[in-house]
Length: 328
Ligand SMILES: [Zn+2]
Image: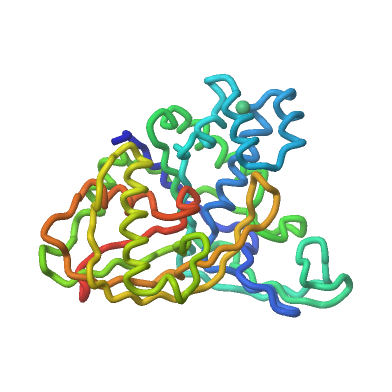
C-alpha cells in the first residue's frame, strides 16, 4: 500500500462564485459544490505554466489527446512537479469542495455568449452565484512519491487564491477566494483509521451512501445499472481503487442482495487535457446501497476506496462515499 499525505485547505469565497450546474433559457444554475476537476485544472494550469520548460510548453500547445499530453509530461525532468499528476494511475487526487452554510444571490447580466453558449449575445440572463464570505474546504491527496510536491501544491493554491480565480464567469470578476485558517496535513493512515470508525458488525444492516456523483460505467444506462448489476460494478470499483493505491485485494466488500436506490443524472466536467466538456451518466449524491454487512471485509481495501473514491474520474473527487449502520 502506498504511503500518502492529505492536504486539507480551508477557504472562503471573496466574490460571488459560480460553478455551472445547469443552463436554462435565461438562467444559469449554480452547483452546490466545486468539482475536483475544476480545482485540479486551475492548480495544474498554474504549475505547467510556471514549471515546465518553454520548449515543453510549445510542444504541448499542439496536443489535445490526453494520452499524448501525459506522455509529454512524463518526459519532464524528475524534479518537475507536474509529473506525478500524469502518472498512471494518478498519484495526485483532488476532492470536490463543498460550501458550508451556502447562500446564493442572483446576478442579472447582458448576454455574453462566449461564456454561456446557451445565452444569446445581447439578451438578458441571470446567474445564480454563491455569495462572498461562504466557507468551503477541499483536499488534495498525494500518494507515494507525489508527497514530495506537497509544498509546491500548497504554494500554488495560495498563488491561485492571491492572483487568480476559479469557476465560471471569471472574466466578469467572479470566482475569487481566499485561503483561511491553518492548512492541515493528514497522513493517509490516519484517514483510513478515521473512516473505519463506526462501521457495522457482521450481519448488521449497513448502508453505503455516495457523497459525490459516481460515474456509472461506460455504456451504463439507468436500466442496465440497476440492482445487482450496479452492486457488482461497485464491488469491482472498490477493489480497483485499492489496487490503484498499491494494495491488491479481491472483493474487499461483498454486496449480496443489495437494495439499490440510485438517482441517475448527467454531469459534465471540463477536461483540462482536451479543452472541452465531457458528459457522463452518474448516480447523484445520496444514492445508496443497503446490504447486510458480510462476515469478512478487507478493512484496509475498503477504507482506501472510501478515502480515494471509486469509478471513473475518481482522481477528481467523483465516487466518494460513506459507509455506516443503516439507521445511524
Ligand atoms: Zn514539466
